[in-house]
Image (cartoon, one colour):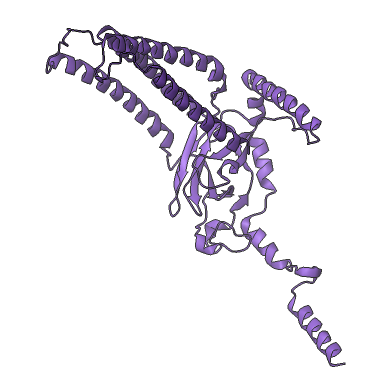
Length: 386
């Protein structure tokens, strides 16, 4: 309703401005008017000063944005390769701001200085090998450096040595949730296919595969600090994107294929919560939530719970109506706590076995056990005959 009201107000304002321009035109009846459609010195002067005004707006807004939204950017990286990503990003920002500062100033200054004037002809020349070499060579050199640096960083991140000691974990994406599958003691994931999805086997794991016998399926992702984790990604339905913002990692999850990358966490969840910047950030968030809670309680609604930082896995592709809610909690443990957490988890094979042994319930709480069902049917038949 509010959106509709805003649209109506904007439409009415547009109509009002249009009517004002019509009224202004009527007041100019009899006045000398230039209808030649050719810009004169006054028009050119106005355009020149507007160029300077727009230049001022660009830089004022840029400076304001740095102070206003600068603290919201991601801070300390929580992965081994994160520093390389941050360095590459910072170098790119510096180059962009430097080039933007020079080109925008020159563009708007020249637009003002060489604005049209009566009886003044523009001086131009068809080509200049020297200038073309400068404005083509410098960008090519800068881009070459950035691309090579980026390829170097990408190769270091994506390269996974087969002999390297890693933990293999599959992340399975579907609208709109994530599921993790751990490879177990053999560190090899069993085969899987969506055609094998049935009951509690929601990932379609091939239970006849020897490598699948120790696979563990779970909804909360735990990984150990100081240990490289080799992630493999699958998607059940549409294109998703596994995004680990604090670990500076992202990979598309494509239906019908397996994608992968690896990273090594450098902070446990508890350690990251104690970083000075994170303590300050959480305190600021909770101050905002407390203020909002006062309004909610005053309106008879439930107050917001205090915020506690957790690493999250997000979907970075617009995959449907509940895309915003497709997230998974990540807990980075110490190696000892990770082993303890994983030790009491049932394997998928055990969960499937338990699900088959447990009688399914039907309406009214009566089981679907075949013997009981036959007996009940017989009893109903006798009562009906009587």
